[in-house]
Image 1 (cartoon, helix red, strand yellow):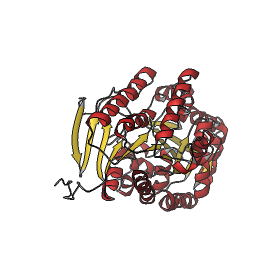
Image 2 (cartoon, one colour; image 1 turned 135 degrees about the horizontal axis):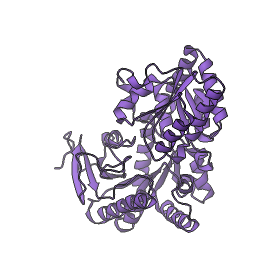
Image 3 (cartoon, rainbow, N blue to C red; image 1 turned 45 degrees about the vertical axis):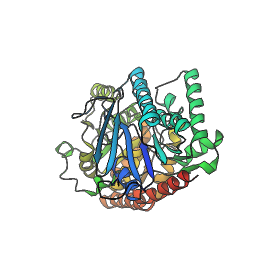
Image 4 (spheres, rainbow, N blue to C red; image 1 turned 60 degrees about the horizontal axis):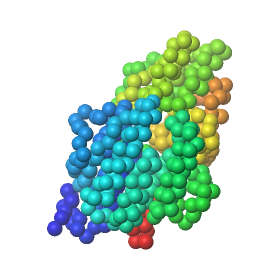
Length: 420
C-alpha cells in the first residue's frame, strides 16, 4: 500500500498534479506551502516544475539541468523538468525559456506522469496552461488554470511582444485554453470582466485575490539592515523586480523634484531588488546627483522582512497602462501583512483594494509631482498616524486575503472540477 511521508495511504486519495514553471527555492508565493496545504486537505500531490533559475536566469547552485529529476519534500513529490534558463532582456531567451518548459511539461504529462484526477496549472506564463490543455486532449484529465498575468495583454504592456500577428496567435491559444479549462481562477475582478468581454462564461470563472508567504512575515525579521540605518527622513521602500513595468523612473523624478523644492531630506527612497531596468535607474540617479535615493542589493526572500520592518512607508508603482488597472501586484499583499502604510501608484483594482483597507495613499502612476506630494503628506504625519494606517493594512489582509481564507475557495474549486 502506497503511503506518503506522513504515513498516510495515498492509494485512495484523489491525485492532483500542480503544474508551475516556478517553484521553491525561487521566490514564489504559490510554492511548497501551497502544495502542503493541498496535501493536508486529502490530496496525493505531485508538483511538476522546472529547474530553478528565476529571477536571475541562471540555474541555482546545487541544481544541474537534466531531462527529469524527482525529489520529495515533506511528503510532496517534486518532479523537475528540463528548460532553457533565461530571464533577461532577450526576447528570444525568454521565449525559449517558456517554450522549452511547455514542451517538457506536455511530454511528461502525456507520456510519463502517473494518471491524475486533476491538473492545476499556474499561469504565468501562458505556456504552462497550454501544456495542461494539450495534455488533456490525450489523458482526458480535467484541469484548473490559475491566471495572474493576463495574456496577450501583458506582452505589449511590458514591452516583450508588440507584433500584431504574434499577439493574434497568442490570443487564439488563450481562447483554446479557456474553452477546455474545467475552471479558471483569476487574480482580480478586472481580469474576470475582461474575459467575460471575450466570451468566457461567468460560471467557469472565480476571482481569488492571492495571499503572500505568510510564514516569512510571522518570523522575527531580526535587526534593521545596516544599509537602512541613519538614512535621512522617512524611509520609503520599494522591494521587488525592477523592470519596465514598474516604471521607477517616475520615483527618481519625484526624488529629484523634492530636492529641487528644498525637501530633499524629508524622505529617502530605498530601492531593493534587481531587474533589467536597474542599471538605467542607477545611471539616472548618478547623473542627477540625487542623495535621497539609495539602491540596495537583492537579498534572499527570507531576508526581505527585515527591510520591510525597517521601512516607514512601502511603495508600489506600475506603468500607467490599462492592463495594470486590472492587475493587483503580488507585493501589495506582502506589504499589507508587514503592517506598514502604502504609497500606491497603480490605478484600478489595486487602488480599490488600498481604499477598501484605508491603509495608504494612492497617486496617478507615472507622475513624479504626485509621488512627491504624497511623500510630503506621509512625512507630515505623526508616527502614530502612520502606525494606524499600517494596522489597517494588516487587519485587512487577515480578514480578506489570508492563505487560510483563499485555500478554502481553491479546494472547493478543485473538488467541483474533478467531479465534473
